[in-house]
Amino acid sequence: MLPRVVVVTNYPSPYQVELFDALSQSGQVDLQVCYTHLCLHDRYWKQSPLQHASHIVNDANLDVAFQKLKQCDLAVFTHYRPSWVADALRQRHRAGQAWCFWGERPGASGWGWLGRWRRKWHLNALHCSRRPIWGIGEWAVDAWQAEFGPERPYFNVPYFSNLDRFTAASPAREPRKVKRLLYSGSLIPRKGVDLLAAACVRLLPRYPELAIDWVGTGSCEPALKKQLAAFSNRVHFHGFQQWDDLPRFYAQADVLCAPSRYDGWAMVVPEGLAAGLPVIATDRMGAAIDLIESGQNGWIVQAGSARAMEEGLQAAINVDSETYAAMSSRARDIANTHSLMTGVERWLAAMHASLKANA
Image 1 (cartoon, one colour):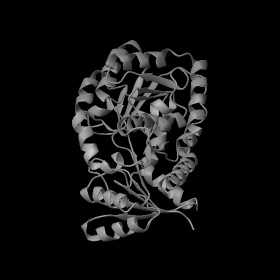
Image 2: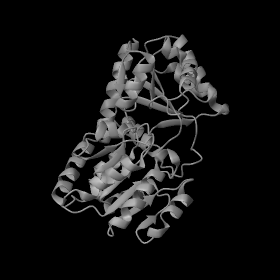
Image 3: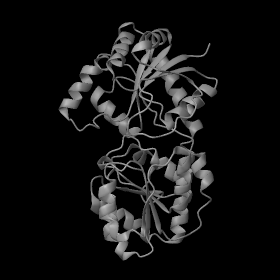
Image 4: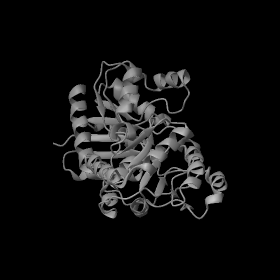
């Protein structure tokens, strides 16, 4: 009989859906996913039909969710809100049934000791047990281990999605000079878009052929357009783009810029690498820490610093064409290690190890 696993997570984002669909189609797990929300207010993705068993949990069907959690072999919790999720986690723990926690690096809120106290309160079952924790990237694993101690199994299980469309849309990149930059993501302060814009203001006058595409929308958009107005012929804002439309923007670019002040993972990084783009990212992004080797397939710069972002851009602009082609090839190579099928294998390995640890 296949292991029966229930995942409790927040909403069906495209990358989670792709992984859960692939897991269901693998024939190696009886997977059901309980989503606490149908969508988030600031995400505009079109919802594709889900190819895995799923439920949007609300007050009307809470009993169904609790029943499924009671009957499964392993419950995987990705958060502890709303309150029914924390209740379900505690019930699972008290019953002595197998469960684990799967999450991004703790501390993203910046609440410091107050945030740690809050996590300790909501995740007390983790503190008083040795249940497994799946960290979304090595950066997350290190932080969970520092906060919850070494006496439990830890697994690096980041986000995975189908990167093939980014690779297919971008033919092998010939030797060339960097002329077109790309930013893809929400235009919000946490993403560091103001820092990238400040760096561009300094560099665009010095490099007349340099241009940048901004893909996304958010609260910073009016300020960015004002800040970059003097370069409107070379700075292009394309607004929000649907999941399937993104690869064509990557195909047109030479370098991907990911200036986040903080990102638990950042799917944009493996997407850029899969498209053969050297990626400039910061040292507070899980995917950058796992996948980028500075000077080899991109550059990792200090988060929160416009000067550091400018130096990263300068390095990319000045790279010679032969080195660019080599970096592009290495970018694709590392992206190949982060395929959707690799994600299925790592997820299933963590599942089996967690079942064994909970036995």
